[in-house]
Every structure is written in C-alpha cells, then in structure tokens.
Image 1: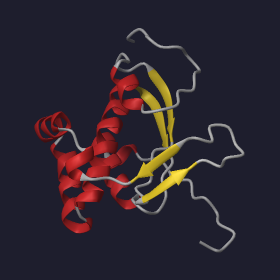
Image 2 (image 1 turned 120 degrees about the horizontal axis):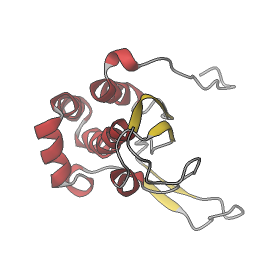
Image 3 (image 1 turned 135 degrees about the vertical axis):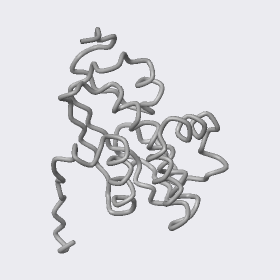
Image 4 (image 1 turned 120 degrees about the vertical axis):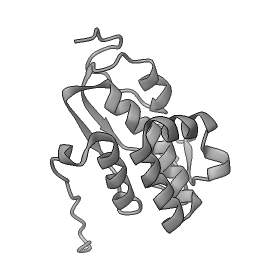
Length: 157
C-alpha cells in the first residue's frame, strides 16, 4: 500500500481538487463530500453564523468554469465520463455539462486516491442526481454502487 502523505482523520474544507491532486494514490479509506448541487442560484451565509461573509455562486458556465486541461484529459483518458458530460450538454444544456465536468475531475481524483476497499459518500440533491449517478457509474463502475440514502422531507417529498 502506498504511503499516506496527509494527516489521518482530518476534515478539509474548500475546493478539494488541489488537495486531492497532491495526495498519493490508493491511500484513502473514506471520502465524504458535499459538492454544489448546480441549483443555478447564489448562496450567502446567515449573518448570525460563523463565516457570515461566505458567498457561493452555484452557477456553471461552459466557457467560464471548464478548463481546457480537464477536457483534454477526460476526452483522452475517460471516454465513458466524456460520454456522460456530452449527453448532459445535449439534453440539459451547457450549464449541466459544465457542472458535470467540474465535478467529474474531482470524482476522478477521488477514485484515484481511494483504496480498493474504500468508500465514497456523496451528498447531492435532485437537481443533478441522475446525471451525477451516471458520472459515478462511468468513473467507479456500475457494479460498485452499494446503496442510496434518501433524505426524508416533512412535506412528503
């Protein structure tokens, strides 16, 4: 097993791509992540809470948020992932494709750093759920999916 080059049992907050890319392969047993949902909205923190100046735009644009190096690597090395992204672009438009490209490069890194018996817990809502499931199947393999945790809503959703 490769040597771990990061602190064990540590919570990291922020864009995980630079951090993941700095990690050795096959060194993580569990990843829990709560990425953006592609809600096409702006979010602002509650002024009475910690981090009240925090702002986040959950909007994705193909010409602004997708990096050329991501496209080259995905097209060259991950044809199944590219198929999901292009299908999403055709069906839902460029914004969904941009979101999946942004998320896809991060999930590819998650796959690389997870051990063979490692697990990924990914929190996502209904907005992009179906496309994200296709993306996960393309990256991890359809047979790797174990289960889905459904959040119960009081409103019957």
